Amino acid sequence: LLIQCLHSEIEKFLRVTKQYLPHLARLCLISTFLEDGIRMWFQWNEQRDYIEATWSCGYFLATCFVLLNLIGQLGGCVLILSRNFVQYACFGLFGIIALQTVAYISLSTKKTSLQRTSRSEGKSMFAGVPSMGESSPKQYMQLGGRVLLVLMFMTLLHFDSNFFSILQNMVGTALIILVAIGFKTKLAALTLVLWLLVINVYFNAFWTIPAYKPMHDFLKYDFFQTTSVIGGLLLVVALGPGGVSMDEKKKEW
Image (cartoon, rainbow, N blue to C red; front, top):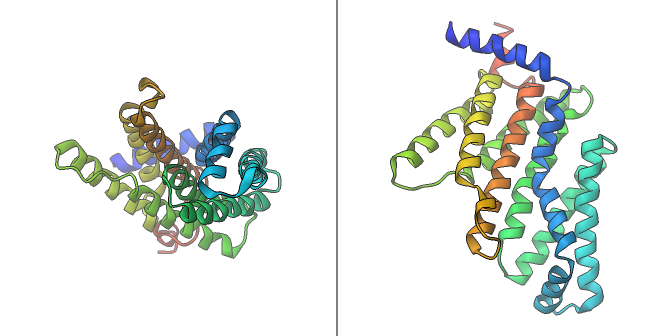
């Protein structure tokens, strides 16, 4: 009875926010792209000099690499948020992932920027796909998006021995499994959104740490990583689990 009441309240919430929730979800999903692109904009010289010095590729190639990443990420974000050429924007961002993967692995340098980009951007591509037109393959795309959400969520787990970390992992894992199999999907996804939102603001408050301290970057990475997962979950809340889910199969029973 309690679950039915909560489900009813969620449906009311969705009716009120249906015009805004998908946009908010997309913004959260691409937040790592956006942050990385803006960071490259404001740290243009540092990024270029770092690539030039570490890769020994020369001034011109280093400038092209940074410029391509900046335009690719910010341009892709604008297209996705405006819902223009979304599929092309997603493939473009996927190309940025591949480019950064090859570049940063070959450089064998700090992985922070790559991890922030590759993990969340990979998910951004697939989790944004359900906004396509209605078709049978869409159902499997939505299933793939839910599975990738599980992989994204796994990066947020903290294997510490303290009670709260264990509780956080157990609650989060139980909810993400429900999302993955598509059972009480919207309720589980919205509950996990609220859970992660509180944890993210409280534990990953990078704005409270001076920018020159390494912990600032670590918390910033965790913050946007979690924000991307929240974005994927919000899309699940807004669009539903799709045809390949227990919620849909229950309608046939």
